[in-house]
Length: 341
Image 1 (cartoon, rainbow, N blue to C red):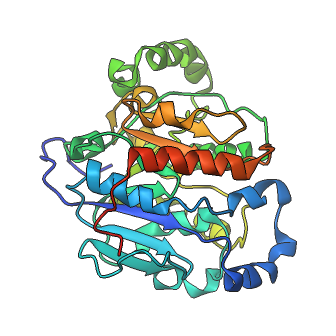
Image 2 (cartoon, rainbow, N blue to C red):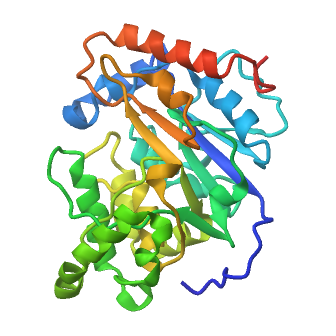
Image 3 (cartoon, helix red, strand yellow):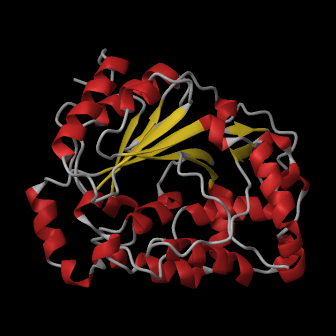
């Protein structure tokens, strides 16, 4: 990339973007049902849309652990929780129609919602994208997400594993990288061998180097299923090179096996070397909702961020797990934030 950010002190404004969905909204359900025949069931299960009723804890965590945040953009189909104080000075409510082109709407595809975030009016150059199941878990600083103007992320090569239909998005993201002009890309860069990525990542990259050298192609990257620190300008740059792939995905009302997703933006940062290495395995924790899961121990750990992911249909007693999650979150964050009425 042509941007020289190496000497930039991180005094710039950092925004948070969080996507919110109330899957119980009758009007939203009615609109969704009009298009649902086109949905691939394995990529658009009910678990993708159900509500855990825990969004207030997301705000409590941000207020407690990231008081430095400049602006919080809440992206929504149109619904909002009744307890949210929309007059809060740090809050900006964004309806899908405020930033997603009309010809893509309505959409029930999280990929469309996230791939177009750079269109949000007033969004800072430096922003962190959250799903509503990503929670800050201990005190953070701006340089946990950006250093010298560079997003922090882990660079670990990973051959794409074809284990489920969702794996297609990893293939599609990597295909885009391999179709780009190689002039600004670096299959090998010194950052992939930095121990700041963690010892395990360093060893994996060493092990895969002969394959990378032989094929001279990207094999795929291990994704950070954590908040995404992104540069708006790098998104614009990528879209200018491959506008058709973003156009194709944005037209899909639901997730499809042809989609790319927001992880492509991070992959592009890795491919251009426009990032600062970090050990994501120590930074955050991905926790799947399942029977018998111990949510409390992770919430009271030292991880900076955690993801309590509800994407599985393999939970026998979802209501019980939901109660356990809410109890653990309330124990961790008992005090209301100023974002609540």
